[in-house]
Length: 307
Image (cartoon, helix red, strand yellow):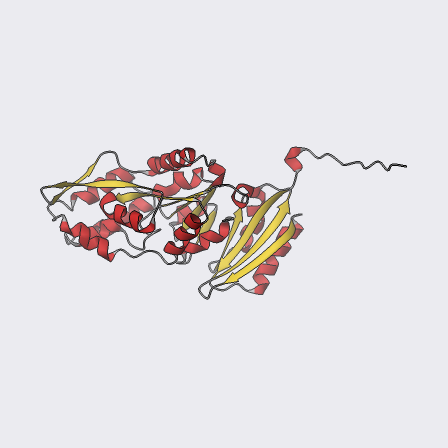
């Protein structure tokens, strides 16, 4: 006698999906990890895998969960567990599977520690003035293109050599080189798009073997900075356009992209990506992003995806 096995068919909208829930911080208390696990289980999620990492700089606890909830609901579930010391990322299914992914980053105060325009302005004795405008623009209080033209204008008359001087003073953010290498070694695409300047970015992009890099070009005439920017400004709309263009060129759906930035100029890019990460960002950017990283280690981003 053959036994009939009946399989219940469930509507596609209710088929459980896999997500990664990543808790991270300089210190992760076991009690915090248990609260995250309990909150997920009480929401109906099933924990099907777990891994932990502690490299001496920060700790990471990764839970792989199966859930019928959508990602916004899961993020709402863990949001009350966020603190100044601990971040939580809920990563969508597309970033956990096979296939090439794209990592795109801002440069100033993200890939690198400094704001290049301020380093250049210091040569003109105008660093404090320019820094105040930069801060306001990054909070979204000023139009980025207008603020950039105003800041670059103070550089008029400086010798072209200041660009090389500033280039030698650039410091990568902690873990930046490790993050880039991890993505590239796994066969993924790494790009940067900056409201800064190509004369600074191009040597850095070559050093890191970046797949794509785009920034503004400073005007130079007869070895002297003209105080102008050549061509259209790389603003928030252009950053998002670059994300879409580079992902399309590589055949990578937007769902498999990760964007990282810190200022209002990055908001469109963060919104367009499969996962938008705010890195030591302004409050408006932190609240808009999918994940907020509030410590100095950029390479924690590698734990958010399957490499």
